[in-house]
Amino acid sequence: IVFDQNLNVVWTCNAFDHLDLKRLATLDDRCNPQACPPLDLDTAAKDWTHSNALQQTPDGHFLLSVRDQDWAVKINYGNGEGDGKVIWRLGKDGDFRLTPADASLWFTHQHDTRYEPGSENRIMVLDNGNTRHEIDPNVQTRGQVYELDEQNRTARLVLNAGMPYSLALGSTQKLPNGNYWFVAGYLPDGSGNSVEVDASGKTVFALKTKAPVYRSYRLPSLYGKVE
Image 1: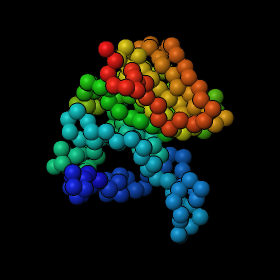
Image 2: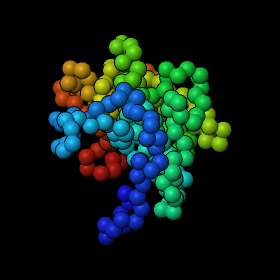
Image 3: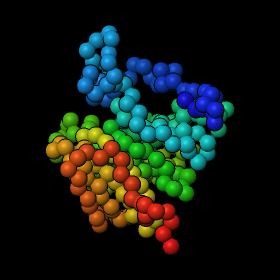
Image 4: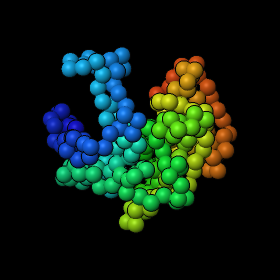
């Protein structure tokens, strides 16, 4: 939903109109009462999309992270003139051919999908990895960067940094020094793990908290610009 400055609705998009209703959540995810608003018709509901991040793209559309579909989708917003249809789907069984050609490298149940600042074709993703974890409990959560060629529908994985498995939560950030800040927010022991990695994926700093962390971002100062 897009509002104007007076909170009037000026544009809307409904997933039921534009996504495949026959495609279930990849883990047949359920929304249980303790994790969702009260349910009137049953004790649990299908958690079909669980979208968790939205960003306007450099060309005036929307990038939406749809966690339970294992996709990031580009939505036709057209700076307010679009019809809301899906332009493309990034992820396994989507519209892009991955390089390297290894389907296990695609993100699953991701968080905080966003474009790198100043880039028109690089997308950062916190790959929680839940779908992979169902197959292999030893897999890691990963901080990833994809370089997209939208015209030819190719995606090149340029960064794939491993970190402890996080079943939920997470965020991504490009730092001023060229490194990346990834947050694996909900480890099985209830802790959170934030890491800084360089362009090769090597961890150069790590911070662990006793509590889960939904998002975490590095700031130069709490008091404005630092000279």
